[in-house]
Image 1 (cartoon, one colour):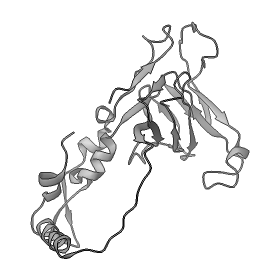
Image 2 (cartoon, rainbow, N blue to C red; image 1 turned 90 degrees about the vertical axis):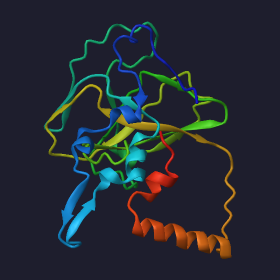
Image 3 (tube, rainbow, N blue to C red; image 1 turned 90 degrees about the horizontal axis):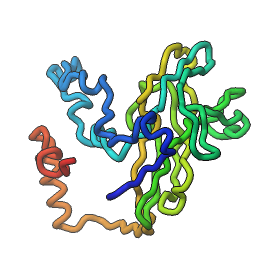
Length: 232
């Protein structure tokens, strides 16, 4: 699928472009041991590093990246970004803005008196007709000190302005730097085709296949990866 990203020509050499999610995998996953000794099992067990659905969720779609370093100290955000003058009107000049806490009041994301941050967008995103863009927190990235709010944008029609990404800051003890290039949003196209949910009981053939598949998975490691997983 062709996805078109556009930005202000004055910023094209400054902004980190969106990247395939597979190119933004975290260091902790790369360094994670594939097996660990389990006291309960009395043998080594495979870790999440060897769970294809876990890893493939992190590799799916593309990432929007933070355009510059952002310093966080005592709950305050600051940055020193030498951003060139924009050649178009209404382009944001800062990596972050915010939503007042009242806009989240009554939702599980609301925190009393705490504003939500908003990662400003400098790229527009155009999808083919019939597709929307699902934007969410980078999959399985609980190491990040914020939690993005998920949203769906009809980016086959709305593509002349950027999509901003609101988030709740979840680590009140974080003091440090969010470096330029930090993944702030994971996005992937979703079809707007209507769903037809067809729920059926097993017949004899599907029951046999179920038993055969589960037996193989219990007896042999890596059955899903070797027989069913689509290589990406």
